[in-house]
Amino acid sequence: MLATGEPAAADGGQNETNLPWLLRLRWGALAGQLLTIVFVRYVMRSPIPIGSLFGLLAISLLTSVAWQLRPAGLVIRSSWLGATMVLDTTRLSVHDLRRQVTAQFGPGAGRAPRLHTRLVSFGFKFGTPVDADLLFDVRFLDNPHFVPELRDLPGTTEAVKKFVLAQPDSSGFLERVASLLEFCLPRFEREGKSYLTVAIGCTGGRHRSVVITDELGAQLRQRVGGAIDVVHRDIDRVRMSGPGADPDHASPPLNLAGVKANE
Image (cartoon, rainbow, N blue to C red; front, side):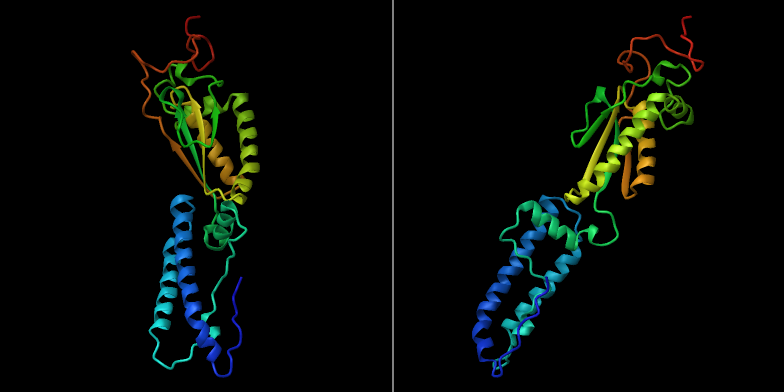
């Protein structure tokens, strides 16, 4: 809230008596504000405009220095000591404090979205992403690795996309996950979460997870908007043949017509 200050006394005597204490309190407030900004930005990793905040603190610091170096006999009125905003943290938890600071100074205070969402495709054979908040497994989908014409193609090609998205389970999975995230993202943002990583995995991270992650990203941009990035972590790490090649279902390979190759 805004501090308006009280009218100055006629002779300014009371103001001069209180001034040293008020200046001490102001130095304490500046130190507290600095610690709060550093804590929110570097410990909580909230994307607040730290440059602008430090600029405002510098102005307040220079003002306090000017007050203490004022010429002798200069009367300082209490209204000059008014603050731009007072935030009482006495009864605030760490989470409540973060919400209030982010609401005032974070990207959510303007039109920019507060939550940054990252969709990551990966291969289980290379390990799950350590920073994943949500993880989905799409190894239940038919694997293009067993289609000779598609084996060497990544999931970013049209042929692999058509093969994966033509499966009924793909559309069912995408609809359910997109609806879940459409429900969750605004609530994560309201809770003060700044970053969300959603990991989608298949065996090698080259085909199915790539297609599903790209399609899910496109759907979320239409449904909720905001900052949504897509990263394909393992798309170039899979060995297509020889020892250590992409292991998966032990079924014979399929051709594009859906007929087993050995029949």
